Length: 346
Image (cartoon, rainbow, N blue to C red; front, side, top):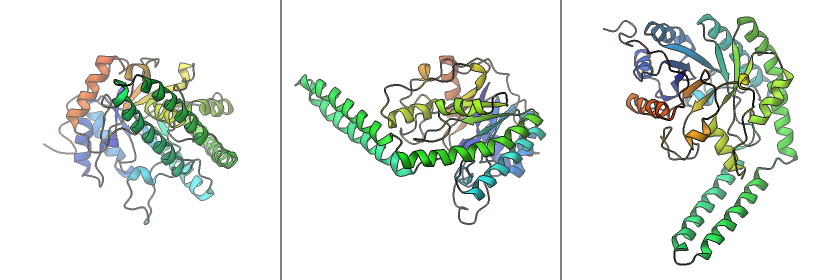
């Protein structure tokens, strides 16, 4: 089913009625509840959405935590990590996700999507991005004179290969990075044990979102490693083709790694623009090859439109049309009802 994430909601938040209108007026039949919706307001959103004929597709976790120091941060930046090496933070994330599973069960939401967060320091990504920016700038200069000097095409190709090797060297996990990743993985595995037990008890599926972070959790190969440990548990992967593409570029790879061959392990995918393109770009505006990126998913898998904050409903409708035209919106969704009135409105 085609679904819409609450990522488009403004921060600081609008009134609940305005938030509900922003989500439902887009006309996307499914709703994915993210950090933008205060936990106490989830029941009201569920009531209004279901009353208008919309489906509650998934709930994202961990949920934001209250912090005086982080009060000014966007809610998504206030979500603790299940892979934190700091035990207090890990336990906070674990309890937040346990609560999210129980919340999803109360409101008959079948899937809880878990994001792990960054593992490696951000300066590594900045260094890789700088190499990519320098490469693009030089290639533009070389292409500008290639019509006068065909040899420049050869130089451009050689330069590109050199820069890819440089990226691969930068992104290669050294011993310190391996140790940090192992600490994060151990923390995640400790967290998943009680989470999957509760999810199994409630009949809820836990879906890990793939990362865009170098050496982070969970990437496509890393998911299989984790799944084998919890084989038989209600654990799946939510693919993020934009993240996978961005990660492959940062690592200097020639192609994006393949998803697990077993379709039963894939809950669905996020439909969003390639990371690193101009701010506010929607699916179809950026550099992602949509047909290649979203081919291979089953019709029944969830497709989640994740739009930048403040995106208007008419632009969301445009994205939905693009998805339908390309055949990447999955099985034909039910038609939602009239979202008005909202919360006692006329």
